[in-house]
Length: 560
Image 1 (tube, rainbow, N blue to C red):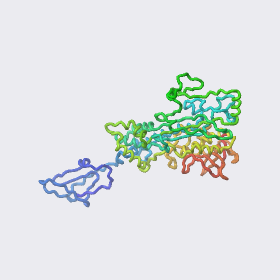
Image 2: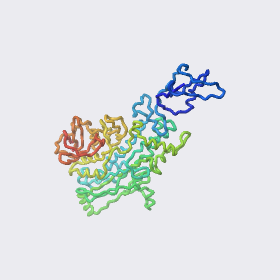
Image 3: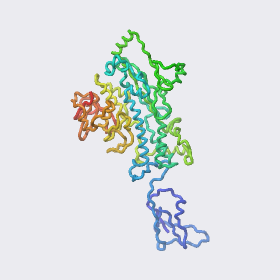
């Protein structure tokens, strides 16, 4: 009898135990053999001879004409890729009703989308501090208005000369955002979602890999334990006279000065603790006086008492008319733990994975190796999933760059226009372009910029805004009022039409029809060009600052 391999690819692991039930032994002096669904009868390939016991009669191989009637061997349906420890197995698992053709419908994609949305919301909460007035941020951190109250500023319409409670510093002088890794060293803002998903995939391989809820619960706990951030406000400082001059701010706080509590994704304010005060020999048992404000258990904030003589008060009043009303900086530190590092890596933080059970050996060299092999794979090619590798979604502007652009603003423009430009500049690199994307809320919270969504017409999968949606979001976030229209065509009807020579920072420029677009005017550039801030659908696919030719059909003023 002769056989040949079926053309169907082998999808399982060959073993004699799987073959044995399908072997038919010698019967009636002839041999009839079936070798599983991988083989079919054929007389033109190779012969199979079976060794017989010494006492057995001679056996010959049947010819095709003598063969028994052909036995139809069923071919099982394709079951998909084998389940392996170094594979993202949940990418091949689909909920009931899905046909399995779209990778974004898999259970693996669902888990990734959920974690991506959580990370985006978390980053939105952090970024929201940058758009808050200092007084609002201070209140959120549990500080009183005294922490951001400077001197009288005659150019600030909100300041009343006879009411020091109105002398609030209106905006941040500098914003310092620093990212750290698990060892508290500088980081490039890399997301750890792929690392977490890889660990969860290996862990659930030893359990029920298709239990999406258990997978997500494990991954979410690991994400929460590996993310934290810290926010603080600098002391008030003064320059040589910023009403007509600028001064340098204090140095950025160091990591040791702003180390967070060891809890996940929480807000902190760095002040002197009671224990630190006691160790320094300071008396903290006395009741609170006007020079102290309680911030809660174990914290207090010291305030200076200004007791001025009449002559000193007059001198200070004269100084207030011509010098600096005060500045404060915002300091944000973001901590993300990955697989690297010694004391704070994901393996160390994994409480569930470090508890072996009957089916799970714990994080051994072997199981860690599976994670490494999975991390090395191209998930877009292997599973149809594009995993973001960065927490930030683009290249954001640094403090110095924003200051340089702000210095371009002419004297005498309104505070609202200044706030619009600063907010727009601070959004550079933080809001992906997404065709048809419109804001859900003012500010960053509630918008989940950067989270995974269904692809737009160009295949973009990160939640974001289109050019007109971004304009609407900027104005909504700064003024508190949503524009009546959020399309490019609709914005032509918003505000008041102006001539090009009337343009001021914060006005918008609109072009319609095939190359429809809208931008925020910042300043005039080289002859015939403007410098603008806009949500770009080009290669940057994010908010950017760019010099463009003046070929705009409409100039609109939306604020005074």
